[in-house]
Image 1 (cartoon, one colour):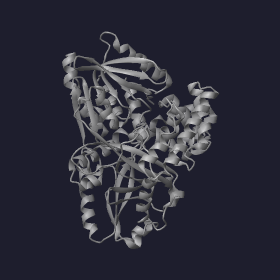
Image 2 (cartoon, helix red, strand yellow):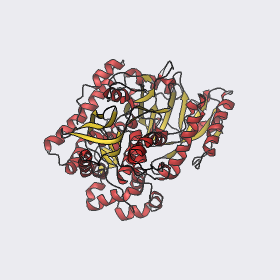
Image 3 (cartoon, one colour):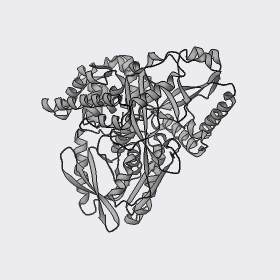
Image 4 (cartoon, one colour):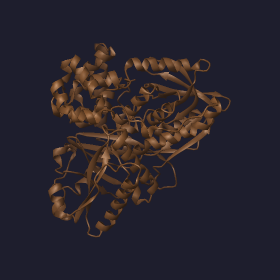
Length: 575
């Protein structure tokens, strides 16, 4: 089994050393990416696999912003079909098929949805839209990979989803899309880039740009863990900072053609047994689209779509946001949900390009690439599903500059043929699941869990367990996960803090009623052994996490965004 580079503590130190060396004559990078979300990670992978020397800087953790707080769907977007944005839908459906079939079959999985029909006349209208949706997917370059839509009548709907108010409906249409753990997707893309030679440095903040005349020739950065300053020189800097795009533009004198509006979307997580249904469902609201999405032993309910101009690092969900989602989902449920049913809540910000629309729900999800000054590429907009296209376009925009400076031709993008870490061997290991269970002593059900998270890299996790059998035990306080997964998050996946593990490498912070409080101390002790923390540092990590949870709980009791923001930012940031 081919093993990929680990995003280990040692690898981070080596990346920082390599970045410091870029100030030496002739040692500058070809491409330096600012921002460790889905777009930035995609740009790093696209650039490095073209043969360009590449690095990525992220001021916090990989996917710590928008990219870990989405609806976790890989989809064309029925909403955009209704807006007649056929190009975006077709492009996204093609990317869905590519990732499902070739690039990330271990991470991207099919999921069934019901589109409830409240009036008889809706059937031909919605049916025609879904026929077009499936037709676009089948007409793409890659296999559709999911079943086609199917019409259901009231009796069939009652059998499939007994907790819907089916007696008030004319039936439904079942269709399929895909889902992904968005934070794992970003980490896996970054790890794949690292395996091809990209330098990945998290907790490293860009504080300024290096200039030679008008030209940007690199950045001034700060290692937030050590406090050390460094200069990183590059022929091209690509800004993929999402909702922080305007702030980055200010660093180059406020010159720039992009203006991004942050739109807040919140999601609720409730136990799977609280809604009896074999499929998720989708329903239109007056402002947006309501999704109820199967998520393991849970449901994800979302989303809202409202402007946000407060703290961008920690957007807060208010009581009004939560009430909005509960009120809307309860219109189609026989047994209403209330606040006591909510296990987890998360809020994220979409970076929308500002246009002439009168609300954020109507702003563009298309992406734009601009060069505000020589040597600086900026990309903004877009959606999770089409990250690879965005990354390709950003690197394409850098090609003329790179070819001019180096005198060498830059090759075309090949990321449509570069499987992500864990894709290789996934199918074989899935076929061998019983053998893996017998050999490792880990139950088959947990092997399935590991395969869905690590794919062909499951061998690396099982190797950890073979050397330390105690890691086969469930993590205390979050028994859906193994202790080995915490250790692996540090040794191979770039986790530096307890929050990284409980919020992004696992989803314990939204999948448990206590938001991961009971799991915090056991997880921190496992991390301490890998990162060399002493007792005081370990206690600080736990204390910080508990403060964060309490601040989020308090914010979710406030009725307004302003009050919720004030409550959320009361928890100190840990770097």
